[in-house]
Length: 86
Image (cartoon, rainbow, N blue to C red):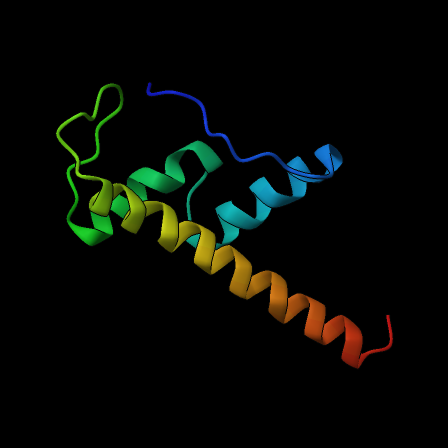
């Protein structure tokens, strides 16, 4: 596959929970499959391995969809926790 992501989780212990959230939001069995599901839904030809034919625009659409959905859900959870006094 391509190079590793530069994104670093500030709390490494949160990796498992973030992967579970990604699976839930995107609707896949494994977090690694999320980008392929999103790409398929957007009509972007993402394949396992080299994807040098993709433009940065298309790659951004895939990552943005995943990250944006996760951030929306995390904000929603935080708002609910604040509302409930947690």
